[in-house]
Length: 111
Image (cartoon, rainbow, N blue to C red; front, side, top):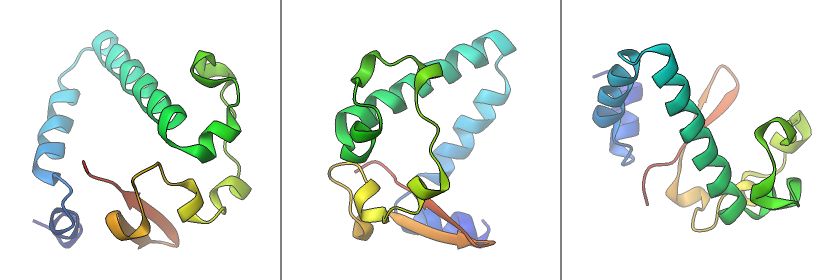
């Protein structure tokens, strides 16, 4: 196990399960993969519209907003302090932050 995977596992991220899931996705045919991708995308949007005040401000019309009409986040959005962008129940103390090449990566496992 490489250092990055080890550090994620140590922080509670299920890296072994994620690796297994990724291998399963690679076996899907293109139509099934796209359907899986759309389902996951819609679940992520619904979660943030229900649990992330920052995104609720970006998308005031709520869950009825079609994917094509969701706003594209700008650099300024991403420069908003992390604490203000986290979903309810998350804090900088219970997420994993990792910098690489100047980009901050944030991984959140199941809480």
